[in-house]
Amino acid sequence: MWEGITAARDIGRLQTIAAVLIRYGFGDIVGRLGMAGMLRRAGKVLPLEHLEELVALPAPVRVRRALEDMGPTFVKLGQILATRVDIFAPEWIEEFSKLQGNTPPVAFDRIRPQIEADLGMPPEQAFAFFDTTPIAAASIAQVHRARLHDGTEVVVKVRRPGIEPVVEADMRLLQRLAQIAEEESPEMRRYQPRAVVRQFQASLTRELDLAAECRHAERIATSFEDDEELVVPRVYWEFTGKRMNVQEYIDGIRMSDIAAIEAAGLDRKLIARRGGQAVLKMMFEDGFFHADPHPGNVFCLPGNRIALIDYGMVGRLSERRRAQLVTLLHGMVQRDVDRVTEVLLDWAAEPTVDDGQLTQDVDAFVDRYHGVPLEQLDLSMMLVEVTTMLRENRLALPPDLALLVKVFITLEGMGRRLDPDFDMVGESAPFLQRAFVARYAPKAVLRKGWQVLSDSASVAAELPRDLRRLMRSAREGQVRIKVDVDRLKQFGEQVDHSANRLTVGLVTSALIVGSSIALTVDAGPTLLGLPLFGLLGFIGAGIGGVWLLVSIWRSGGGT
Image 1 (cartoon, rainbow, N blue to C red):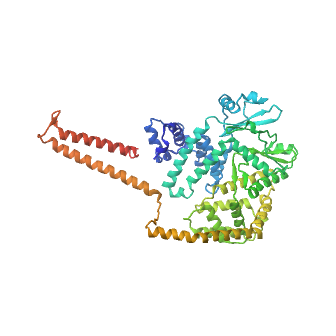
Image 2: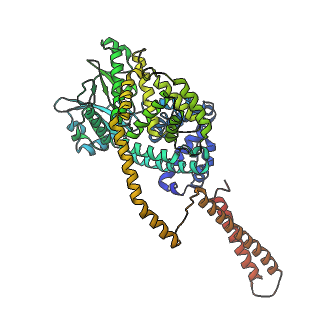
């Protein structure tokens, strides 16, 4: 089962992960996945201290703490899971959201060689001032204050040393776990764990590249270049690379510090509105948005301006996704149950759903919002209800939409802390109305009609050639129907192995019986005073028996 990840380079990491899972009461998972037996055979011992105390904790707390103990990859995975309000109940989302907190920093003596290698010189030479004490630390990197030689205050973000091989080992493990989950559990298969892991790996790879974060920041800065209300830190590319970036230091008040905002005489209502409008513009107009706007990443500046930092996690909404959102809202307003259901099914991509139950739930859902003007929709509550309905129907949102829902809910929470009367729907209504008008404007309808006509003409033009190829293949007997059953190959291998063991078992039994008979016959050559053929038969039976036992043990039958 674990051939792909049992190389010597991963044994130590597997031991750490297995020990954490067992410590928090998830030993059954370790056993089912074969990790415990594999580690025992490698001579590794799993510590079990404090087991009773930790197992007494609620399951969401145990999972969150286990993710923390397993390191940066799993902390980031927990942060991604915090966006999956369509899969997890509120108590799980609450615990996963706590993984946004700080992580103990790396000692500067450990990180200095990496900084010097990237800069080509000591940091004290590259900068007029460099603070060796970090001002913030997270699972991927930590941040230090510095000053350029021209007096500009900057922050230096440095990736944790040695994190890349750890992440690579963790991703090999997660890929295998996802494969096992899809193959063994129909319940998990509907959530497409392998696709989720692939997307998570792509996202984590981008976050490990600190230069990519700066490219994200500059893309958003370009979109807001004519808007003085949103500040994006300037990037200093001469110091920036894959393992380190240098950006402008933002001297502002954290969005969470309400007392300081009031003491500075800033307008809380105006700040809430500007922050909401900025992210909504990213979502519905640009299709590229800051996906982690928690209070620690948002600063209030003089003049009631907003500054957004840390663009490591971003979200993307394609034009098709934005059109689907508009279609969903239009279907709700028009009480078009079939249209709303089709959008949800497109999002979930689950062919085995109970259409009747889903349609019934959608009908009740749409009925609650029928006749409500767009500007009066409680959009956040509506999104929560959509995700709850999907979860109850055992469906899952695409990751990009799950991230959108999470950001939307986070934004509304931040806005309400600043202004109890903050209305996210009121802020989002103009963006949605513009998108709605653009979606059904005569020019857009004409363009879509022309595209459909063009595609249809292309298909019609290719049809004769495709039919000729099909008929030629049929005449030559080359038409094949491919049925891909995921478990069929594995089942065949299991049958093959079982047949081999059965054959060896029968041969061994025959050798034992035949050798016993041969030992009672005095005729023929002897060895050590025993009939030679009987002795050779017993040796062969012994070898076959040992092979059979080893084969059963290696397959997990002896664990």
